[in-house]
Image (cartoon, rainbow, N blue to C red; front, side):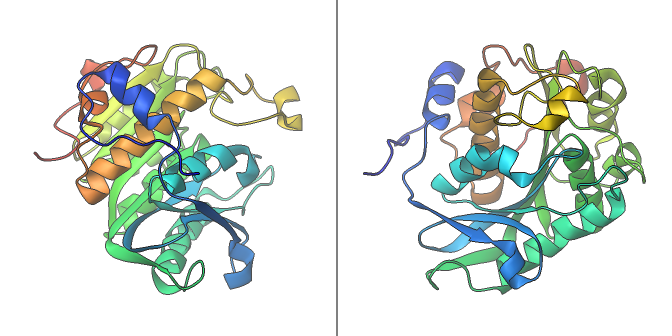
Length: 280
């Protein structure tokens, strides 16, 4: 049975959050990127032509499985999502993970997905990521003119600098910071990234979120890093990223109220937000 989905533009941020935090109408398929040369996970709708695609970067030491529900959620709304499972060691290369995000987009565009009933439009590509993966997404967008939108969750600074790279990104950017993040505090990570952004950008702060709040399930890194999985933060991320990528990559306006208004527990930081995320 298909999940309930929004059929018209929600009138308030609350209604839009409720709609877009639910699974979308598409049945979801799972695949292994390793079969086409890149370790990781890919989630797609069962069928669709000219679909948008997003490459998702994991946080430091985190496996892609810790974002499984987010990946499936985006796919259920008609977005192909590829998450490389590379550079997960202590001394992960930010530059190379950014390169792998770009390679993941190459695979989405150039490789037959699903049962041959899926195709991706190369003009509708985005990148997203958590923590280190968010910073690497900024690096990838700065080097790849195909990228049309960027979303980050508790983004952290990288080497080379994501803050420096942000000044070369002119496409819409949605940045969700974690208010209680002690590992990548917003004041020295998400905020300067948003401030340096060349294109329209929006910074939000999830009030109850720690650094690991956007990850799912339990993992040994909770003994090393700050915070733990938090359902409310994950629900916010699922709804906001879905509305954002549908709006910026496909022109779908059903989540407009959520993108332009304050969501409960995750208000817009007007001091670090400029421009409209998508043209009317």
